[in-house]
Length: 68
Image 1 (tube, rainbow, N blue to C red):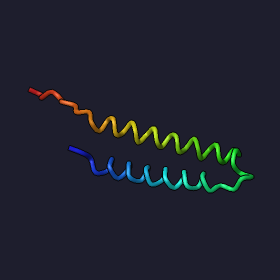
Image 2: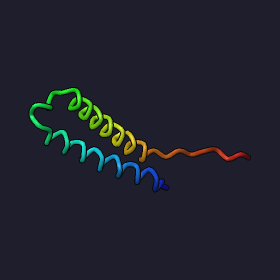
Image 3: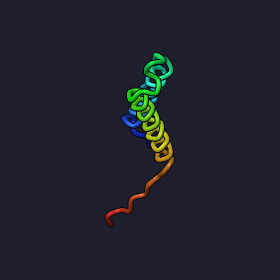
């Protein structure tokens, strides 16, 4: 069973990652290598890592023992 909220969160993260990569790719030359560019790259990397971790966890199944 998959949680719809997780899928929605992943979709939002992927869209945000693409948007931020586009922002970074189209950043004016004088801002490339700036603190803002570094922040954007770090955010993109963190989103990518988060999505990857969620995709790995999605394939894990947990069986809980019964009470009796």
